[in-house]
Image (cartoon, rainbow, N blue to C red):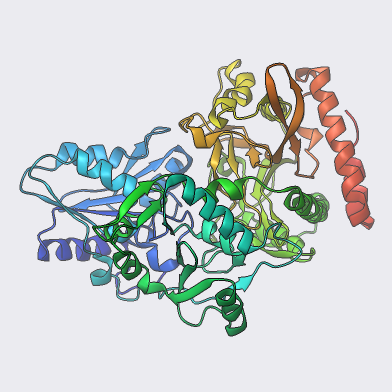
Length: 603
């Protein structure tokens, strides 16, 4: 949390409203976004959190002179109600798949003669277009002002971490081949140039990584790919001289970060520019010279990086063994700690600290891949819960502990959720746990035509829960990067995602499978593995795919009600545990190995 002369949201909003009056602005929008439309933001662009006190990663703040509201989805409702309490800021709940409801509210609220403002540098192009369509005639939309500069006196500077090469043996393709493939895709669209602003696309294309964004090994940059050379726009001093020389020798020029817009404005008349309207901001689009023909299509790199090569998949499997071994060491320690009558109090924060320490001892570990979610009992029902010192629960008594965590390794990115019993658990706990397990198994065993749209698979996981009148308020699965973002497109197994052509399931994609049950005020259960799309036997109906489960960690059988599992489901679990035991045992010894053998016994 950043310090400030304004000590609370009410004070900060008062200052913002004064700045709005000075510029004759009637409504101001503060999205959770940066110029790269990142999920996790550098501190410099965490203005929505600074103004509102709401710390969730998704949300849009809208402020008028007599109203302030944060729009966010069901993953964050409980958290937002707590964090916004007493701030004068309303929680505006977004139903699944309705992420632009704040635009509808503005369209219905603003009157002719009024002005809506937003920093166009961080407003997604697609949302800008929706906003322009929604505002009534006579309402002015300003995108040329960042009012945070006026009210955030100690606003953090831009990050300055060094960029490094993600070199051999990890990248399957050298950057020259990736650039050649990108230019081939550009040619199919008739484009002479291509602008990229999404940080994971840039990191993938140039085989570079950084540390500018929490949890994601990326760096602030824009890129412009031309017919012969590409330009990487990064802040001075971030690229070591030797690496910069290598890039320039390989056809990649380096320019200051702030000059990206000038480069777009200087494109020659007659040039054709490929851009992804969902992955650039309004400000980036506005910078393009008038005489340039703009072609809108998905970034070629977004599709390319989602399809891991055989070599990359092998590295991910090795990283999963390291991650699984770390988890065995952690859970072995946790089991012993929970039954130790002489132990010091253990909180949800202590869970995070010990788990991260276990991962840090494993080969190739770089950082967590997201903020660990350790939620005991009622906190487990908050889907994106994050423990704070003043609110963290102590792990004692009876109930369920949900732990959702992941690691960034040089050879891959992990994301896993497990639930363990603390003390005595109830029949209701076991029933919910077993239903979630059945849902996870159902999707993990699925076979489907190659090219099926990923959202169509969502119902496979929900069916066992729907049969019991139960549902959950998040997607079933998200794509995962290769030592990149833990949330990666274009595939998404979610009922709120449109089944568009780019969501097609293709070999090499890595996706999470993570159904859950959440009972507010009581407990939450989620079981999550990562899976890899691999070939299944073809038939007269075409090519088929299936999932290879990548995650290696026991699922706690103490929480299972065996009578609710079919025999084929129990056989899947037993086979999975046999694989986990065989793959992880060589990496373990002592108590952790004994724990592994105990927790992977057949049921």
